[in-house]
Image 1 (cartoon, rainbow, N blue to C red):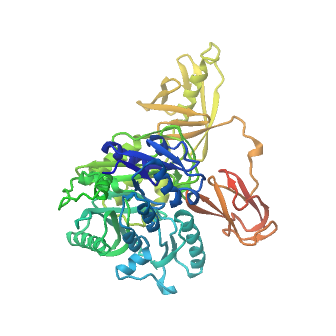
Image 2 (cartoon, rainbow, N blue to C red):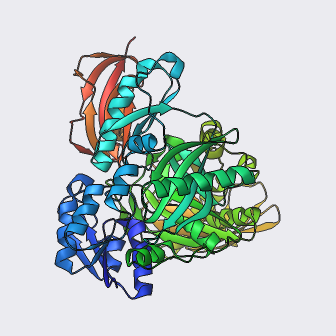
Image 3 (cartoon, rainbow, N blue to C red):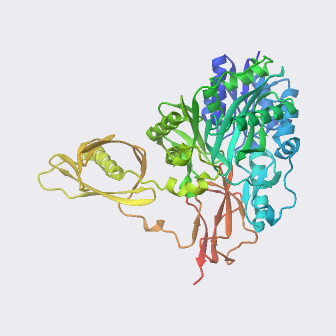
Length: 617
């Protein structure tokens, strides 16, 4: 029997595995990097072991340090989670060689399937060799790992070389393996996968299908089970192919076989030899705990001959600290508050935790289960809409709008969903009365220091806020009945205090809950930034300035670039790495590079000046 488990991972998945271990009476061991010293997964584990360093290469990708940590902490088993070393056969062997139980598939199965190139060969497929114009579009893809890292779509031959280079660099940073390959890119397909679970006694379960078509940067955003709209014949084919792949490598444990489905034809993508991020939707539909089953299989216990029956429908949305309207730029800062009512929430953060630059920007996964697909979608969209999220910018509004989009609700979506619909999905208008509510709450909070009605008419007070990139000015005054808005348009102040404002708008009362953290203000779901009354003239940037859209590390500067060089508009200048993704910063205009502050290896804050291009006159 397993008595103590070390999870070779961090964040949400480590916390999720620890939860099951606690329910089973199994002691838990966390490993953490220096930035994660106070992370939730390190706090909730029974024991935590430090991995010195900050980057994944120094910490969570160091299998030797993790095995030493397991031995030192007295763990008798290791669970890899997903990402990092979860599909690394050498790490699995090192765990077994240390006399520990490996809660995962045999190293030989990982070796056969974890490399996407070898997996395709096993399924009778081959990557593209020499790429010609007739092969376009193609997809450059990392051979190891997943999560959309190390992947690039190439539509022009002249872009292939740069795509290969950047994909190799990103894959090496994220997975410790820079191998990439090229395959045909299937346009407008659906991403459908089959959850597998196999024991050491020859039983293989195919736990239904999942649809994961809504993706950004080839990383899943919304997933559901079962995959809607498949014919019974196609569903059976997918299950048969998945089980055949598992039996071909004598698979043991949890795994997933992924396909692209187009024109009712299944195209094999890969087999992930690990637990998937989206496993909770399968758990909800089949009423199972996949982590508990992984542990049971690792202990040598047999699975029942047949899996449980599916019931209802489940939908999962990944809540990211990112700005979808700004090229999905990851965001950092303090997560002051996070609550999503009425649904399962898997997260690696608690109120007050810091969101840093070193790791994936996923904050949480929200999962809704209901008797039908329509009910599950409605339940999840409503929960996210009512969620309290105070902290860095997130993709919450995008998730709500995506779930309510007709194409998704009718199951007509493909992997090109965000390519087609991103602009309208991110072009939402915040509540126009949120700034007034913020100003009134602020005024009430300061009223005991000199505010209040006087017999002489008071001068209008002015507050300025930034909302969704737009500056808004609000005017109010103290009147006979307390605070009064100058907005007009049928707005009346019913109640105002430091935390709650009630406005009557055209005869309808609306409640606004207000929270403030420094100059950041949250009014219901609207985030505002309180601006100084008089802007700082020193804050103005010169035309042609390139600033960091997110905090990160400068990993590359264009070859041969130096002050005085001529550059063209759109030409790449600097590459930043943040949260395991590389981001290219390009020249905004054609002209001369007059300033270059970026230094390879240097850490930069959001808004930091990287370079200036003086436009040609």
